Length: 445
Image: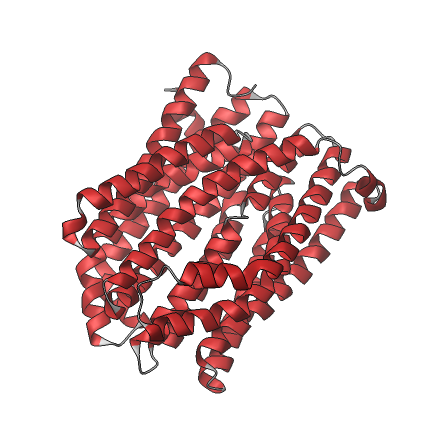
């Protein structure tokens, strides 16, 4: 009865959608970028171009998203500071995040040749796929400073309940990437190198716009002088570091599963890795659509916890779950009814298209199974509960590898079965922990 009453609150739906819709719209451009990348490269004459981009971009995604804790920790801490109206702490969250982002970027640029040699040595992909993957990786690494700073800028702006600025930041970066992708790859014939260079330029374009948005918000909120805060960057840093550590370990487990998906698929042959790349582009579409609502959840939950408002917290949970269910139902129907034409938009290589159709049913089941893990991630990020997120992801990753090796005889089907179970287990573990803490009254603590 109380849930129905909550869902009848128009103001609640307005709050959820004002935060979620801008992020969903901006996030749609991210898989769209992946689809354009795959489509531009997928229409070249050989499958190994697409496989190389998939391999190289996976390595970049792993490298950058292992540091994705910079965005998540910043969102949760900024939202709590915003909810408690602590302007000094709100400014400190940004300066601490930016300092850490620049430090990690410098370290990554220094070590990337050794990382590339070590990681690519484990791949069973063909020499052609590995060669183009290495070319892509060698260029994309130079976007590290911008990409990591963008994590912090996005997280901080979301934490201040501002979804429009991050929306335009992501849209501008991805539209730039798409335009340059077409120009460099098709227009100038730069192939894999062109796709990588387009992404580098786009990251710096997004960073420039994001810095401008942060400066405006900083001035409007009358936050303390950045120079003053830089001197106090060490204040409360231990909490920031501990939270980042736990989210990093969580991200490490997450990326282990996705990296294994790509590399194991590569061992099944060039056509399989190319087909998986096509379907993974659709999986990213699901992820980024759901992340829009997860981001809204992070901001709303963090603000409610900062204000110590249990009623606002429970309303945020109900409203966001409601709209997420609608979105995931639409995505399920989209893949079920139009899967084949969507695959055809990405690649016209007959063998890759037919293989992608074989594994499409796994993708059809993915939206409704995975929505729970995305939203529960948002809840725990907003609550800055790092240990729970870390432990839940570790258990889920173990289940991923257990399912794959138990079903290994099914080949590529075993990979997709493991991925589906991985998504389900992520939601189950976090749901159990949320229910336990909610009943004990410790979730707001």
